[in-house]
Length: 153
Image (cartoon, rainbow, N blue to C red; front, side, top):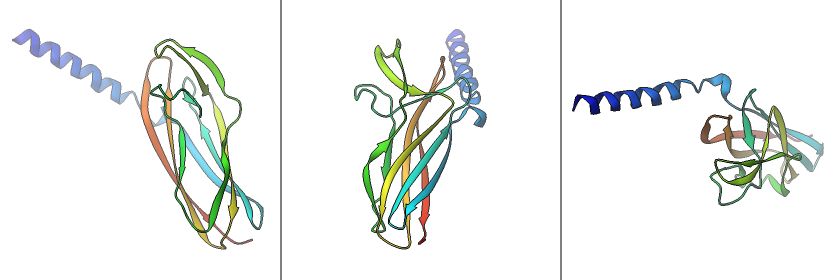
């Protein structure tokens, strides 16, 4: 019975140290801004800063994979989405653990979404769901929420 208790405590301590290793300096950080192109057009810029030694998966990976990357925008009468979120060309590799090819980004990446502005004042609210990994571990999918005010020009 004592050996089982020691084994369980050892395993628990391993998980605790794993959680402590996820400090804020290993997290992807986001900056979202609205760029006005004209009085009735704009572009939402969503920039991710990816820490050294980490990567973030791109849009368009296999639906069968556990990798999540998507953008959700709350409906608001003050704007309308034009097209889909765009991204630069991602890096590509075969992920041995998953057994599938994946696309990803390192360092910095900027996603963008064109919009048609329909009202003078409003708020663009959205959520970015993303997943980041190092060569050793992955952090479960995370959500980053943002809100951008629309002001008249």
